[in-house]
Image (cartoon, rainbow, N blue to C red; front, side, top):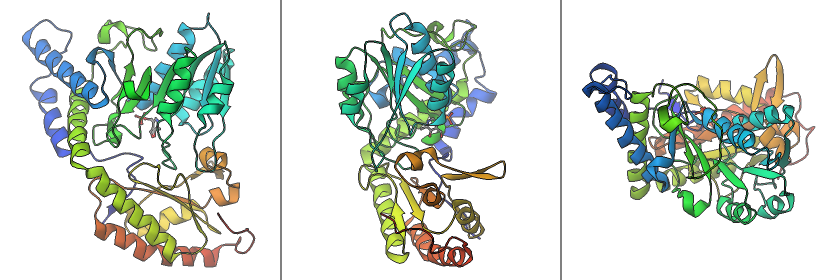
Length: 392
Ligand code: PLP
């Protein structure tokens, strides 16, 4: 059976060109970039070249790029680092209810230390209102952290608009761009952000490597202490091969953005959404209808539960994901779907199909073809049938 991957928001394949670029740094060019000898210098050059490529992708200065072990670390660093460094000025942080757990749990950790956090609501599409940000800022606010696009429902937030409000108030602004980097154009100056998190494995780079963009002059305390790597801002011997891979992924992403590859993904996504909604009744599209990530299709199907859809799809060779996660025997509805106002029983019926650069039209047709049968079967078995009100 042919296997079809539609879970690119979870992770992407590593591009073969990225793997090729990384390979010598395991076996031939394995020096420690902090060593003075030629092996070390060769590795140092590669790290700096990668830094330049990543900076170019987001319109930053290479000196403002700090390599981390992924998006989670970058989010932790930005939030905890700003909070600890600026607590004399204030103890208030603003974020949203739909952030990734890397952000939400960092904020909750800080609350235990006495910081105050406001979790802004979103509208039915998952959009944050910049007016709400403006109204919530006080003279104690030190950080606003709002994601660039949501990983579950794909909604792209008005970061530029929020950036203006935050800048006017003289507050630091961080955005988690883990889902947008490499998929939509990003310019840190245009967006008006002081910090931005990214992750290699979400745009065809390797796992376990990411970046915190840190605007020059930002007052921050280190998250990881040790050696003087990354200009004293992130200790630990650099993941040279990973960093080289991330640099290559950034270079390739820039080329794809120029070539319009993501426009093709948008067309496939819209075909998938339309095809499913035309063929199946009682379906709802989650997230903003147009202002969403190129590859994201997130739908709720009345009367059924996400995990059963995932298992049925997997048996037909299709890899997807759901906002409904089975943890320790109980079903927990996604905090994002609840925040856009869905009742838990509807949120449990969510299916996320996220497309990537290598998905084909035939794969879209296949899913549109098999999904109605799967839904029909599951609905026939559903004990809830008829209990819920109509959607939309
Ligand atoms: N932020 C968002 C929005 C994400 O989607 C993810 C990963 O799913 C992360 C942060 C964490 O990134 P990483 O897997 O690199 O730690």
